[in-house]
Length: 252
Image (tube, rainbow, N blue to C red; front, top):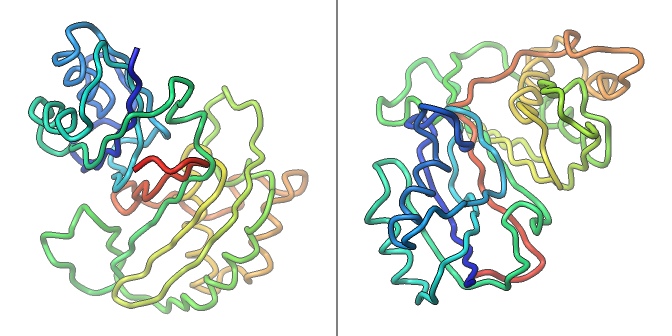
């Protein structure tokens, strides 16, 4: 077998998430159908992360096996010719046979885009979360974000699905950038739980509005004394992007 990795970009608003679901259009289904057509048999495609419905990706990474060797650029063009609108391979490369898009990943970076203004340009609606002006102190929220750095139990910052072996994750970088009307959260870690980034934003919003102090956000990490209901709302999917996947080896 010949294994390949590909960088995938998609508009999450056009799909019901990454993972295959019966009867629904998903990114993984679209990729498997396209790759299978040029490979001559059903070909599973593994992704580095499972994005929810409405969540976008700038640089998701997937991996799959081909029956014969392909020149990476020709493979990219062939797969793209069979993909629907809203998803595209941006890069492709041959990788070792033991490479796996998910299990070989070292870190994942997400970015969340907020448009904080009275009006929004129509062409970015659905590509950023639009919130109208209030007394937001985003510098205060940026201070609160720093409290989440490191290895913690993020049980109160996720939507539990029942299959988690652990809710402990490590955040290696987090930064809230205020360039109003655009506000951007950049967050990088070894892994993320379901809705974790969107719930973190809900708590940072509480800090920005003065409803909690920056220090109090850390109290939610104490799962003995607080619950998910003590925190902020879950921000909409439309502002979230899977931005980059890091590996020990250079892929491209």
